Image 1 (cartoon, rainbow, N blue to C red):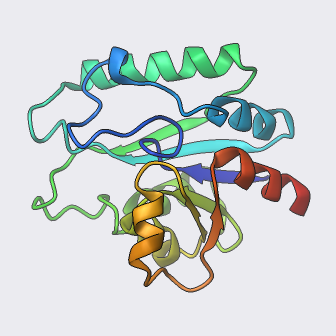
Image 2 (cartoon, rainbow, N blue to C red):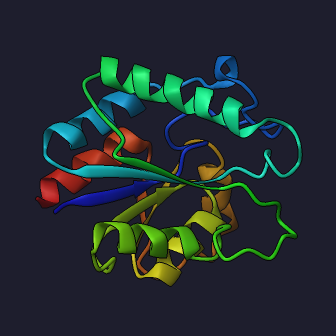
Length: 179
């Protein structure tokens, strides 16, 4: 089974320092839905692993997050793709949970759910914490330069073995070329 793990904000959709708080604020990055659709058509399972501390901060509810994800799934289906599962961390940065990236908890949960080793699984993110969580779980970290990715690249000090792509479409091209 081919599996890819994607962060949401900054990878699939435009990010906001004020958080994505409702479905109207969820706007896909051009080409991202089509890239996921290409993975889906090639037989890959696509899973999203996303910190959503806006819940802990009281900025939106689980019902609103579900509505945001329903919009994402609808638009993705219209593009011919699918997300197999969404793993989220609803906790705040000071809650001390094991699931909030840069900790690898969500990735380890994904490995258990799909009964896979993560050593060759690509994990795409735009922040250092995305890459750190991926590396800690044994995934192959991919930095996308959309969202906060350019600033993450400029700051340097990326986990060893981090691959870099301009956008999700470019990364998917590379993954599909690898087989």
